[in-house]
Image 1 (cartoon, rainbow, N blue to C red):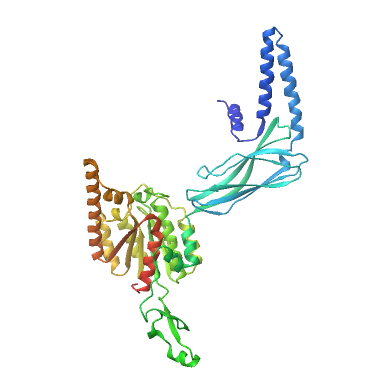
Image 2 (spheres, rainbow, N blue to C red):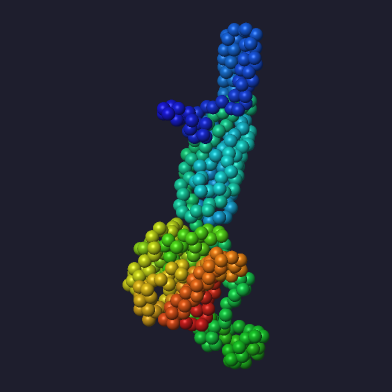
Length: 452
């Protein structure tokens, strides 16, 4: 195909700029040609056929003078800078018609192919008016995207010819993890955890930092009554303590091959990122220092420890576009790196695949050394397929074998977890929909019990 033919074909595919016949004009030519073809059987000359088609073609060109010029149209795209994964967002296209002619249009926005697309958008614009064209889109894949083009096709009132133009509209959009659970937690932490079947436990009496003196209410520990303030104010007052702030939390996110396993919604890495962001928000809100490390065979991202809610944005912008690697995770290398970077005692919270991790004997050696200084907690996603296979009722020999193998794998996992937990390395597994809740609940429990 020659270059000119490629350009012509691109115009029909809503690309480039040019002038195209509309469906209305093509249908008109087809009807006229069909009538003349039928009349040709009456032994008429071919010249009427040519003359009539040529006359219709030239007459249709007059329609082009009643459509706006390209320079009289102006466009603007309004789209959020950040889109959360799998959530619906509205995008607006502002079209200004500065000509004296009305027109109808069809529009395709140059958003990435991974975004949900419902194009072309069809409508009309009156002369001298500005309209807002709105559509919804969903971004299922995290990352940074460049939106550079807008494809616009318009015609006059008769609609015999269509002018096509490609508009340069540059926008940068970041698709970040779904932060719905983080927002719910920050709005009301206690209500969020109670809704998920957990609660923020009270810390041990007398342990933690003094917070305030308040009125005594039913259910408070009588041992915490402040008798001096009670006598002064002539009403029962009690001391309120809260867990000690300023602890160090190191969140480790595995980006190895096994984290790419697909779940009912997304994959393991997507759920781990959402849970990690929620734990980071809880820790920063509590006044703790948070550092984040994403890795596979090598360290991909390392965010040094800091405190304050502003650090949450730093973490988000550092890890929002990490992806699953095809290689296996090198836990020993990462723990060796962590040993040099994290000198202060901290909670090491690892999001990974428990079953894969249990085979890492070298990781156990490094963790035993890290355990002397740090507190370790691993959070993984429960293998629902394995659980379903182990719980199903067998009806033939084949299903019986599958059930026995699944139960064998579950027993192996329990045995290995006990071996690791004897060394002070706690591992938990949660369902995919409750991973974030389980992680933040265990973090709060550790803080309230003053284990760190």
